Length: 239
Image 1: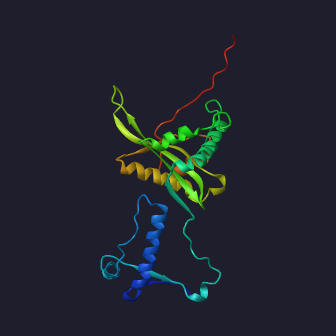
Image 2: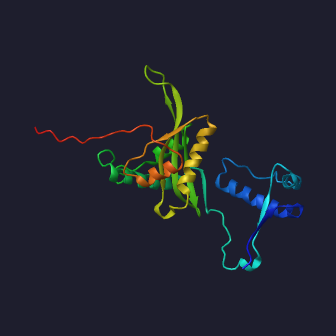
Image 3: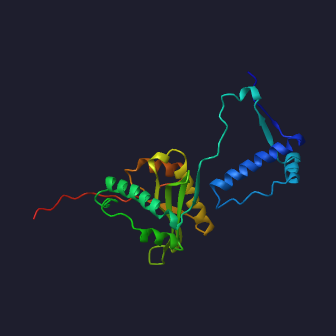
């Protein structure tokens, strides 16, 4: 069986390199539109300079056509991340219901759950309209399947605390049938990017100890523990 070939690109590869770079640009623009604009700068002159320069290198990869049979063509992710709109309110309420019920199941001493206290349309619209809050959603095949809320928080100056502004992450949730696709991580990245563009130097979040899956994701994304809130249930006093 003939092996795939990797070599440095040459002038004969200009068109192929341009097509590959355009595909990469489109992938970025589709999945992170708040960061990447429509690519219109991949001119033949720019590609020629990239290929010919001594301080950069473009490599091409070719698999003989005889090996293509039985291999799936790489596809772009089917989901996209975007800021929520008023048209997403019903889907957002349903996602809040998933996270609220999970919180009530793990910490019933503190949360009532969506079955007892569902989020209202007015509450969600308030989040969408707030200048210091962003709500990002993940859309898969026309359906909203995930969300995250990020808010700018302010610590006022007082005797013991340093005054500061920072971002805080809330209510990251993905529909069960849309998990394990990288959607949660992409939502966190969107919240981080939004925060960075507003001058925030850090982003924080609170995660319950019982939520091991969420803790692992955050740790993989570089989040570290800087404080712990401890709890001890006291026995009920006899009257």
